[in-house]
Image (cartoon, rainbow, N blue to C red):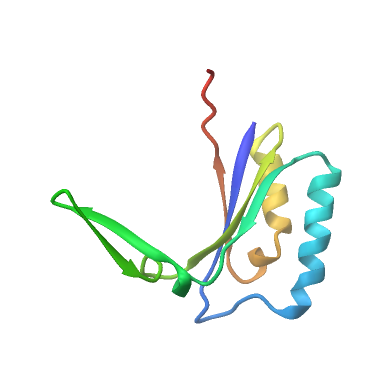
Amino acid sequence: MQFALLYYYDPAVAGPTKEELLDWLAFDGAVRKAGAFVHEAGFHSASRARTVRVRDGKPATEQGGATGAPVLAGYYVIDVDTIEAAEGWAARIPTARYGAVEVRPIVQYDA
């Protein structure tokens, strides 16, 4: 079963450090070695995003991410047998130490 591990943090409180890079490399290597890796991506700062809303049928775009904290910093998609196994991987994501990691099952449609 596939799960998204969505990692968030509040940049006003804490954030990634240069020292954390080794922890990320270790996590990435472990999830790949275990055969659970499907896909991953990190995001640039929300200041580089654009937010699109449609109101009364008209789209409006504004510079910046959707407001509020914490911010979504990135995600991993993994394939493991249970949600508990996914939670175990989520706990190993470095951002979990100062932010949060949401574990969400991915809908898979049979074609």
